Amino acid sequence: MSETTGKAEKPFIPCREVLEFLWAYVAGELPPERVHEFDRHLSRCDSCVAYLDSYRKTIALSRGSFQEEVCEPVAADLPEDLIQAVLAARRKE
Image 1: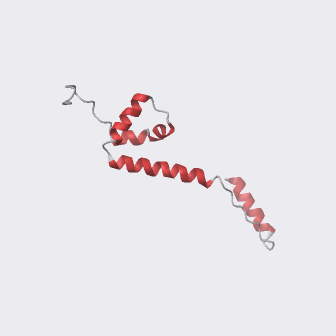
Image 2: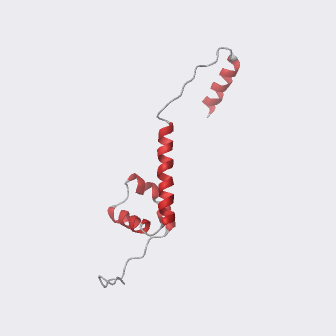
Image 3: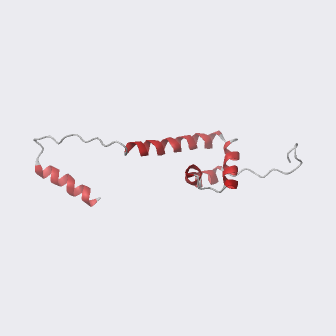
């Protein structure tokens, strides 16, 4: 029970539930009442806060890796059959 309101507080959601819906939380796709439950959990759980931080950094790094393409010129003495083999392998992916 909360001393200030006299009402029983709702239990915190477990870490597992936070992790299961983390993508929706970060994407802003959770309903407001669920966001409140997540925020409440995060206010007490340093492990989940750290995980959320690393999750957000991973997303940022992933997005950043596709923003800049580095194209270096192909060496003039590169064998044509090697180039064709690499291109064929990429088409199979």
